Length: 265
Image (tube, rainbow, N blue to C red; front, side):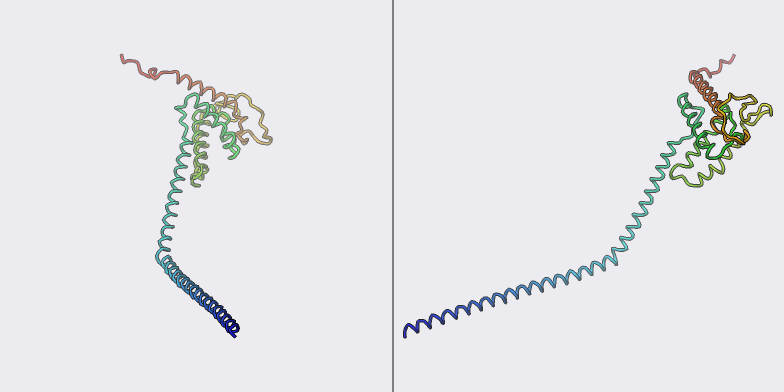
């Protein structure tokens, strides 16, 4: 009997222990669930606060910062335009410095050598072929008329200036409609003046024949209507070039004292 009683007592104690463990486990799960729920609720509250703050910030940006940002953008754009204009002006001034008018009266032999070549190339490559200048408009002997050389030189400088970056179109138009016709008219006055028998004409300078150059391949055209190509004025160019340099060399060798007048008697 006592053995059965001992067995029952042992079995009862074991069942109660297992139940207690299950109860404790259930209680721990409940606590974890409650804690997790509290954390989720806290996150929901924080999210709601963030949404409210975002709405307030968006409203502030829309009502206050947006106009300020727009004004700032307009100010920056205006300042950039001013800077762009200043840079354009600086570039234009720099370009002008690279294309100064040629003062033929002050050129040294070395500088005159370069300017003669620059002018001849422009006449041969730009003025005549691009604008269809004829031998009647630009007589073959133009290099022998120093005033004509000076006129053509400033016409070349004005042409270069009229096509520099940033130049206003009306400057270019003025070269075409005013300065080119003016210089051609001036050349006619300079070169065609004098008695009829002494006037310059294609192939002649002051009535005298110029050294023959290469034959011009312009069939079917009278001399005056032919283009003023380099082969027509090259011989005159060589003479005018060397004569001018010789005069400049003599001038450079002449001291300023040579221009002092003699004492009055």
